[in-house]
Image (tube, rainbow over all chains, first blue to last red; front, top):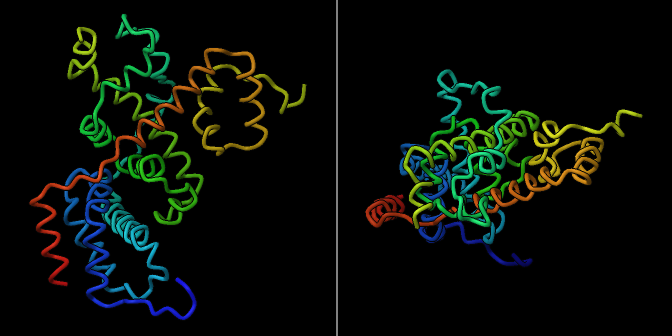
Length: 196
Length: 80
């Protein structure tokens, strides 16, 4: 915003911003939580409306609402802290989807096995797999690789030490690879692809 | 051979590949991974696949919202 411009922080201005950002907010919420995405967006909008005056630049309104949504997610995680479990990492630490694909060769007629394997999944498949991950791993993974937040920013937003976030992203990636493979086997995706 | 010049095995290189891609490892570990990649074709494949999965995740975002959910949220916004 240029010097001298007046920021419009009226109810109507917030409603315009919120209406424009609804699809982005809802889709982020759906990536973060299994159930209750709509409630989460409503809570974020309520917080956003109450603190709309603190938004410094109109151009960052969408990102600002997303960070509020992540704050709501963080608060939900805290409330569920007792039920949020660390995953037995040893089980997945050594898993490599790259090597599993070479060893199992699920698409024997493919010259670009790894690429073709990934192409077999659509957005809904990816969401199913993401929802299988414990949310302490899913959250940082989604924010980093699907929504482009920097790791330092994720640590700040989730109020978690940077080292812990890095470790959770690392474990989240491993878990995602393993669950992607398990999911592909479960739904017969690889067999379908093989006969196409 | 100093610690930073130590050649690491594939298991260790693979463990660090995504962090390497994210530039989230120490300069010493970064050098170790690079040295490993300079002679290990298999781990170069792992690295390329790691990059592809990152791009794959980024491409699977959508901004779709079911019409009924959109309508409910728009009503919520209007009532603020």
